[in-house]
Length: 599
Image (cartoon, rainbow, N blue to C red; front, side, top):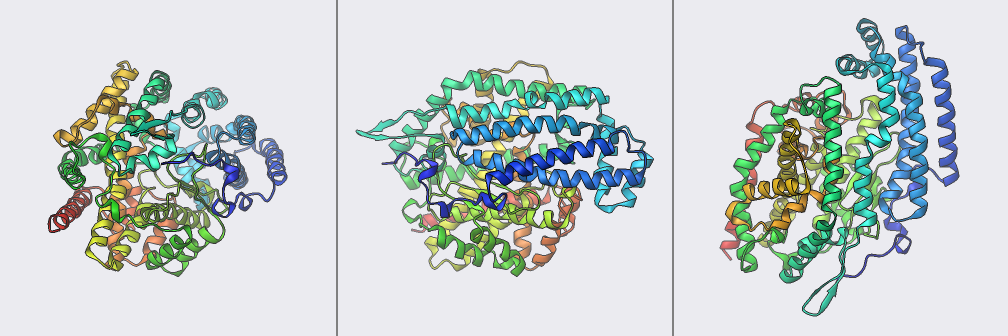
């Protein structure tokens, strides 16, 4: 029977991340905050209304970059601790005070970008030619000028940003702090439930009655909050539509894709090709799960169970280090140093605990170590999750080390490529060293059930849902919990067809993800994995050397996603690479089915 999760203070500190990599003490954090606020006052005094020459613009940008780097570390110190224990009063107060101070900082610094956008294009381009570190940023400013509002309005929007951006925080507070899930019973046994337990354990639970009951009770709790969640989400997308109109974009899609530097056609391609071409293969996979487990029917609650649950190998945190160092050695000695540092310097927060964020992520404050949050369950597939997050860490350690803070972040369209490249390199390494056919089949099933399911199904179906929501926003049609539930359930039914029973409560699945508050993010998972699949094969087959891919990572945000892919000879402007990846997924599924049929 599942136990209640421990509280944060009950954990083995050796398996938690080390916040002293950012600041040794709370006092030093406060001193850093005080000092940067003082320097910001000096920045305002020195540069406001003084950006009349290319020399002054570049001097201001140098000071601006230093301030932004420090703020990234200060901000991470508070937000990361909140993510591991959102119910801690200490963390809530630290983060609350920090947000108030950041609000004041944003108001003070708002003049800078505003003045740059009021500056003549010729002067901006002269400044860009003078300092290569500032070139991409200043050229983007020139492009952004077409959508800039008058300075007073821009200042007002900055002042209002805590309110305008409140939807995501409201969602997180409801999800991680306020929602309390009831215990449930199966055959006289009582089981606790929570977001973390459900998404990390019950979704994969082999015991069918327990798994299905966990789903039912979990979604019953979601249903109690659906109208408030829906109103919060509706407010968010309405804000985005209003902002797109205020700034003069042709549509909310143009507004949200502007920073991704890709046209809507590329988003549509990811959604439409996968919905049409991958669905038949995934339906075959669902039918395989039904047959393997002897289920009476295949339901939405059964989609994440393992093909071979009795074979699920266990792995310790210590053993995962050796596996990752070995599996990612193909990337070379320099890259492997990052892998070792992640463990030796405690970049990773492993344990599950009450109030901890679900899922996983990697944060890489500029000029500091990376921070990886996962919810370790001791199963072998967590090694692939770690490889994925270390892929993010490696990416931004290289980008942060070779670019100014203005140039580290690539388009969201690209950002999942380095992580999924790592994930596939790790999976294929384990397949090659597998000692039995059963182990190989299990590893292939993990690639489908975790790597590709996560990115090409779960998040892609989020993207298909999200597109229909924004279509309604564009058409000025109303949104409600009922409408959102209907859209989500319809998307699920279209993808899974008759192969999977989709109950009405599955429509509430939109409530589970924070991605809808992050712009057009969900589709980029499949975009990144499309490139990641291609690049991992190119590295394994020595079509490119690891150093060539590392050069792409070092480029950070200095190029568009198409240009970054072109650095290793991959053309993302056509359907070919995506079609090849869909065929690869289908082939792996056929291999798994064939292997199970021969037993």
